[in-house]
Length: 340
Image 1 (tube, rainbow, N blue to C red):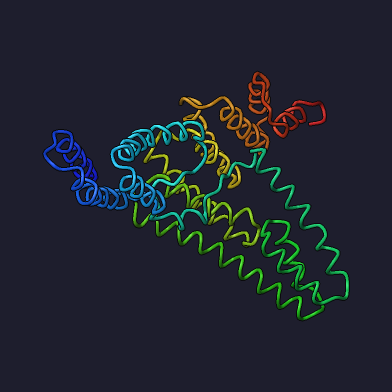
Image 2: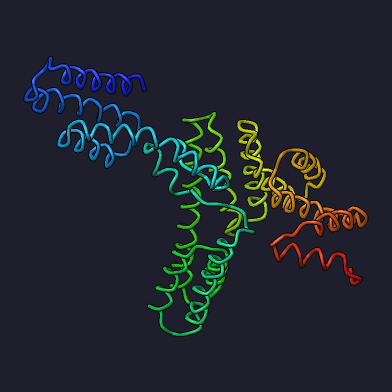
């Protein structure tokens, strides 16, 4: 940052000298301006600006003197403002916190987790439609089609496709068993690679809360795939939980993490911990939709624990909200019906 400020000051000094006619226009165009433009571009590159933007800024500064520099200044001033507006608009999306340096690491694991999100639901439904035709292929006699189906299922890599690949391990034809086993091994290796990349990010940036969020997402993605045995599934849930708790301790403004934490406690059947965290969340300043989800998880925990009075209380509180989550509305209606 110091080098960047110094390079900008150098450019301003050169422009000042040009304005006072202390240097000639020819010297400015051929020597001073290109040299200062190169220094400025290098400083921006060292501050982790993308190479493409650095090249564009260098070109503007060299070939459009003065005007190009003013445009660059406007860009540098407005960029932080745009980033702030974007972060406020998408507060529940994991953005890159560390610049170009870690883009490849983060890009492999950058996903949102909440299953209630409509985009997630539509994507899951689309994948299910993709998977259905391959189920019929394995009932045929064409080995080439079966192998191709296994490759496609590997690319889809969702819970449904993995279930089909697991069933292929029990089929009579050796080739299908062989390729299905290899496909499952590849999916598992990719899954572990994402976790390792996220762990490397944490090693390099141990106080970055988003790095912990990324690894938690990687653990939960692995859990949701259904490729793990029960013991490993529980272990991965515990790991995701610890990462979210660590992230929340580093940045307590992430109120949406309370939803994820209570959801994991529910999956682990740790109802007392769920209630404890939920009380903290409800006492904090959280969004209304997050409050509804947390109360829904409290109701779910009460139902599983057979605490009927608490269940009814939570259901009544949920009904006070105009929630757009159909799953929650249907479940609450069922819990409060006479059939329960």
